[in-house]
Image (cartoon, rainbow, N blue to C red; front, side, top):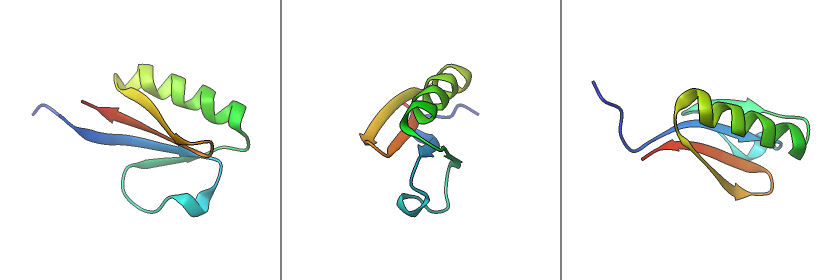
Length: 61
């Protein structure tokens, strides 16, 4: 099975911005959020997208 066009992870500093779905990572600040997003991007072989200053998603195109 090949996974295409999916949200693999959500990274945020504001838990009110997310709900169930892809794996959710709650970070303490923007710096931690950016590091987690960069690491997950490499680990999951996806692309990181900043949707706001409080929210990143990792997607597979």
